[in-house]
Length: 295
Image (cartoon, rainbow, N blue to C red; front, side, top):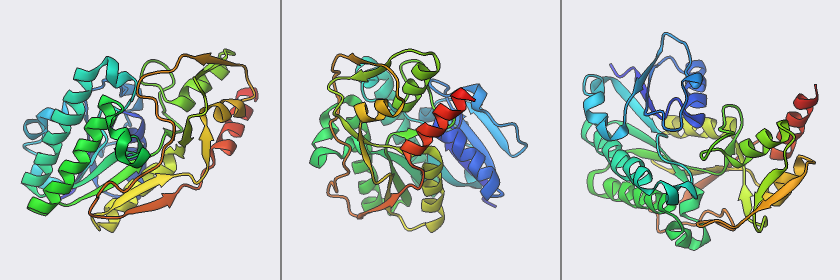
């Protein structure tokens, strides 16, 4: 009986929120596979249905060899997920996103396990040309092409969900893997200027974590082998987001790999991308955050 869900990156921002959601919305046992490069043991949930394994996705076949017959689905979120940092840690990025992810794909294919994969708007923006802007975007775009071919060659079953600048509870707010909103919140709480990378006119869509995980769950349950994007309808420039906090701002130098828009382009994908818009508004979220800091 297939009674097990695997979440790679289950101790990370998105993965830990998904596990909380799965505990409420399903009766499956859950296994997290995480190497804790950006995940944290603070995000682990104490529940008899959840087990945490410290390991690398490139070794997934060995790690899960005694579980493979029981696995219903793998939510693969355990990848290197930062653009600028992929220049500084390119080996780590390739090891995770290419070697590790290809091992996950092969494990799912070999054992006929459904895959839900987190893609990124970073790899498909600017009519597909943004895929060459950074090692991160390149590895993610290659993975999309590989999955398309695996479906064509072997009828592999998967769902792909495109993330747009996810924010919310458990986001990383310090260090090189911090999110934009996490960085701004940390600066605000510590009464420091909010750092904005020049020129500040970079346009982004932001999606709350609760909207994101609901679509991941929906995609799995629908079981239609589709591509989904989850974002908010409104675009913000980075400077506009910073101004929502009504705080001082300092500008940082421009960085390699910086994107100027977050637009999803249909890059010769066999399936159309089904767009779903989140219900939680960034502006209202920031208002509540500021209010909580003053209470």
